[in-house]
Length: 163
Image (cartoon, rainbow, N blue to C red):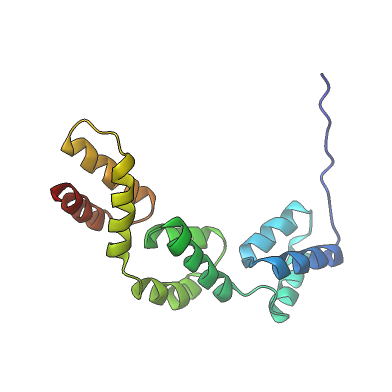
């Protein structure tokens, strides 16, 4: 059986700009997302920076706005903790100062301990375990995978198992 070789699709700077404008009009994108796409499309670094500058100037891309939307989604829909949200934003190319300026206050006004307890109680209903120690370990590992602080996870798991 022969495999088809798919040619890498390249775009000019103008084509990349138009594509990214359409994408950004539909949903928020970070500058890191845009740069990765342009690299995949074969744009030179200098051209990519010019396109990104224009997208920012015309407010198609705004990392602070993206970070706010991302935090809201991950807190409310995915149940992520502060550590995972911050690390994911860093991998998406959002600057540390934007994270400190926008994300940290949003997380501070959210009761993370209450949120953690809610997702751990939900997880406890479906958890298979052989001993209380096993259950506690699995709950703590689950909370850590969601990006919550380990100390908070231990405290919450202890409380849940006590109840």
